[in-house]
Length: 190
Image (cartoon, rainbow, N blue to C red; front, side, top):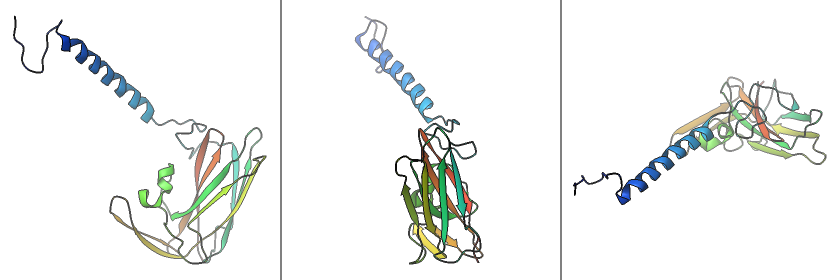
């Protein structure tokens, strides 16, 4: 009988088939994970938001300039023919930053948007759900002036300041059939 080193087997040995099966499963898992983590550019794909491509809704945001604390920015979203609008989320976020994914809008995850309202008369987060027949979604976001310091989940400290010398962005996550889009609207203050 031929001796084998620990951890190695020879063909015909009872562990040889099991190790081959484990290796095949590991390869399959690697292929599946690679396919799932790839980023799609299809605007209708629910796992990848649309940031630059056409989307099935029209978005109008008015009143974004010469803003004062607590002043409302109006948001009006209309579904294009053959589509629907389910609603939107709006956040006050740091200006001049890229927002591509849902996680970019999560304050303590990405550190790009405020956690709390900057004043008693402003909003930090607004969610608007459309009603049947899901053709229009309207809302108002009250912008804030001031600063907020907070800690990310990683322990890093972040400060976001919005005001005359520090323009911020209104970031929308718009939800429609089979996907969502993230759109950014610069805010300028008086």
